[in-house]
Image (cartoon, rainbow, N blue to C red):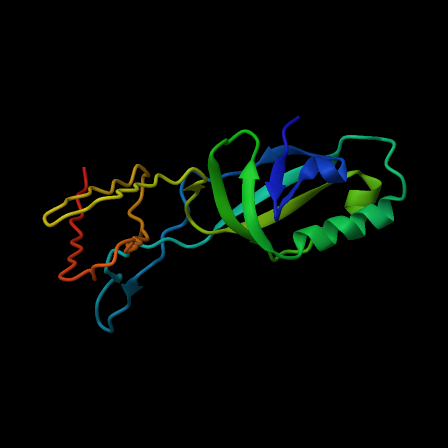
Length: 180
């Protein structure tokens, strides 16, 4: 059975595995439509943003020898009570910013040894292996292409560090968005 990693701990540390994660193909698009009095229907302004993505994860205990399930359930509750990065064993290299808002049924976890945890995730997974470009010597007219290999437009961070004694002047950063 596979598991998941959340908030710096793997599910197996709590003797749990993931039975199934219900990952929607797309997050829900944010609606941007308006009702105009005297007009049928709505006017759709075609929002290009998305809502958070709920990912329900069915979990179960993988050991029948778990001592004191009530204490373990409290440890699990503490683990799931914060925000963190969520990785799935069957989706290597990708991570979600996640938080758990919905309650987890403790009674079901203790008696049936299974429950569902709903992670509220940011709309898109991100790579955990960010591509970095380090160019030690840049002179006038240097062009450094930055490529997003994901499936959605995304912001990036650009750091410029002066390692010399001469001040940096006339620095120009230009963004040219292309969509293929």
